[in-house]
Image (cartoon, rainbow, N blue to C red; front, side, top):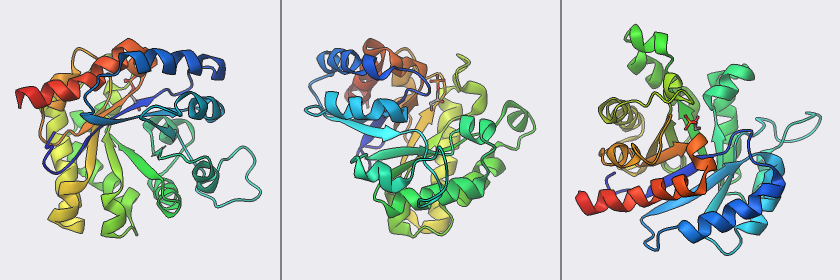
Length: 261
Ligand code: 13P
């Protein structure tokens, strides 16, 4: 983390976990475990149906709230979809766009991700744009090209000022839910590359300000090492975010890093 230019951000992605009735207990537990020092922003991206319960439970906390996906369409006859305007009406701060699970299971393409990012930005919601390579792409040395393409495609048509307000999450697909974390050096290499892609497209001032997260089997044991890297500004955490004790330890790791930097 480079705290001179960016604030750390720790985001939980609950994926398709957590019943609405479980949310109150989760937030109460997390609240009791949060470090007093506010060394990072924190948020949880919840399933749509859990969001109202999360808003109620998190009312007096510093927990930001996000969704996990959004429709690319503004509104109308799109059964089952949820628009950016609906998320904005609930007061949400964040929404994930282009998670590898959505790309894979919903056949989402980079231009769809771009449409979602534009829809979110237009509603004042911070997109958390996910990019990442497969194991095969990595083994064929295609990682850097693939990431460049995904970043440029997701941010197409945005102004520099809009890009500055986006969050990018590097999530190598081979590390998601597998227990195989990228090494801190591997993650730093790609997060630094993402920043250089943004620098080339939008200039140094914007690149310096953009928050870049790492995601993929991040947990209480490996968080401090990953967060110590200069271009990793936080984490997008799946399974470890479901356990308040573990999530709180990852949040606390943003302070440890500052102490050792
Ligand atoms: P895991 O932390 O469970 O590997 O999931 C990472 C992820 O996909 C977050 O969006």
